[in-house]
Structure formats: structure tokens, C-alpha cells
Image 1 (cartoon, one colour):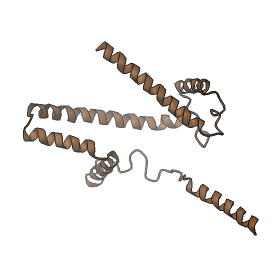
Image 2: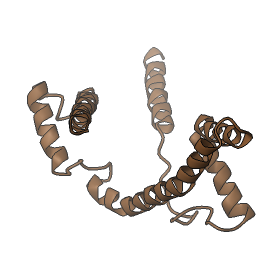
Image 3: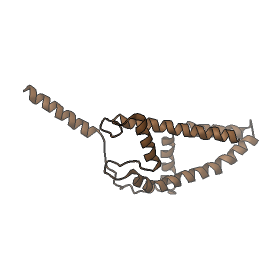
Image 4: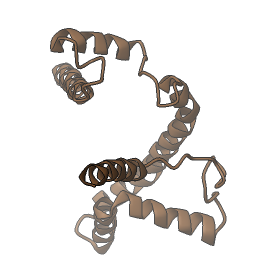
Length: 177
């Protein structure tokens, strides 16, 4: 058991290192990035050091990303803990019952239900759960922790790309005239 745990921990560390290399490589794709001008391995080491110090950089408004994470982390932690407890409270008894009634109709029903849950897209199941528990029974709020009027800036690249192509086309048309 000890060697299994050591192997799993090593695999976890290797996976994290590979993910940081991928993330760092994506940051280097932007030629205006300060990471693009550094040597790869030296820049990656600095990048790792910054991540370990929870310095995730700044958002487009100049606010540190860690401040935004501190705001939303309690809701994420609450959601994870409730989902974990519910999965334990429902999954262990149902799995035990299915194991005791192996090959019977109850085992087949529990197995079919669990496989259907695994197969369904999670975003669809979440929308159905919101509709079911909030609109039908009124147990949970529809919008979660934030009001539906929570101000979210509408940001897409559509307007900026359309305007930039319009500027280029206008410039080309003026040159031809």
C-alpha cells in the first residue's frame, strides 16, 4: 500500500509539472507576453515559483486574480463538500444494496441508473436539477449565490474583430479611390 501511494503521488507531481509546462507554453504564444522573451526552462522555473507563491497575475482590469479567487472559493468549496457528502450518503448504500442483490432486478435498476448518470452530459443534468429543485419545489434559489441582476460585463471578440476588419476594409477602399 505504501509503494502504491508513493507511485500515485509521483504520478500526481509529474502530471502537475506537465500541466504547468503546457500552461507556460500557451502563455509564450503571445509575442507581447513577457514570458515569450525568456529562455524556456528558465522562464518556466520562474513561472513555477510565481505559481507556488499564489501569484497568478492580473486580470484585464489590473486586479490580482488571487483576489477574485478568494471571492468565489467559498462557494466552490461549499459545492464540492455538499456534492461529496451527498455522493457518499447515496452511493455507498446503493452500491451495498446492489452488491447484496447481485443479478436481481434491484441490482440491474441501480446499475442502469448509475450508468445513465455517468452517460448524461453534466451541464444538461445541472440545468434539469436547477429546474426541478428551484422551479418545481422551490427548495433552492434559481440563480445561486448571486442575484440574477449581478453585473457581468459582456465581453466578446466579435465587436472588436468586426470593427478592426471594418477599419482595414475602409482603409483599403480609400486607397483604391
